[in-house]
Amino acid sequence: ENSNYIVGVLHINKRGFGFVIIDEESDDIFISSRDLKDAFNMDTVMVELKKHQTGSRQEGRIVKVIERGQTRLVGLLKNAKRELVFDADDQKFTQPIYIDHAHSHGAVAGHKVVVEIKTYKPYLKGNVVEILGHVGDLLFLNMKHMLNFLKKFMNKSNQLKMKLIKKKLKQELI
Picture 1: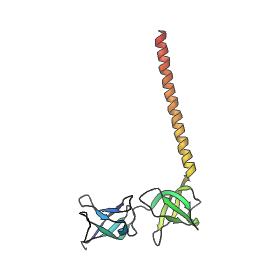
Picture 2: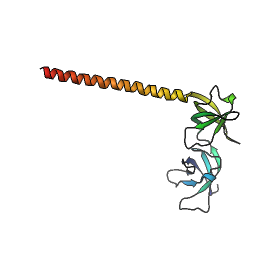
Picture 3: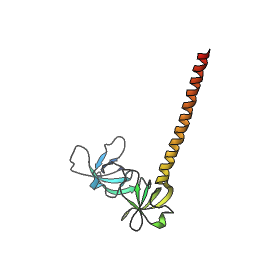
Picture 4: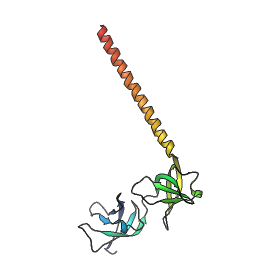
C-alpha cells in the first residue's frame, strides 16, 4: 500500500474543517473544508497526505469514503419546491437532505423526525424512519413536563415548610 494514503475516521468541526483520526498513537490529519470531498462527520475515509503543508500539522485531502459513519439523523422537516428538505439538529451536519413525499411516511413540514440517508450523490436523499412529533407539540410537551416537575417540587417544598411550621408551633406550645 502507498504510504501517501492513510485510512481513518473523520471528525468535522462546527466551522467546517475536519481532522482524520487514525489511532491513539498517530497525530490527527488536518482536512480543510475544500478537501472534504463528499465525506461527512464520523465517516471512515481514505486520505491522501499532502506533500506541502502550511503549518506544523500534517494535512491531507479525502479521496474516498470507505464507510458512512452516520446514516440516521434527527432534525426538522421544512418545505422545499417539490419535496421536503431535512435540516439536521447536529451542527456538524450542514448539508440538506431531500425527502420526496413518497418517502416522508406521513411526516410534514414542522415535524421533528429521524431520517435515514439513502442516496449520497448527486445530492443527499433520505427516508423518514420515525416521526418524533411536531415542533410545537414537543415544546408544549417539554413545557408540560417542566410544569409538572415544578408542581411536584413546590408541593414537596410546601409540605416541608408545613412540617417545619408545625414542629416550631409544637415547640412554642410546650
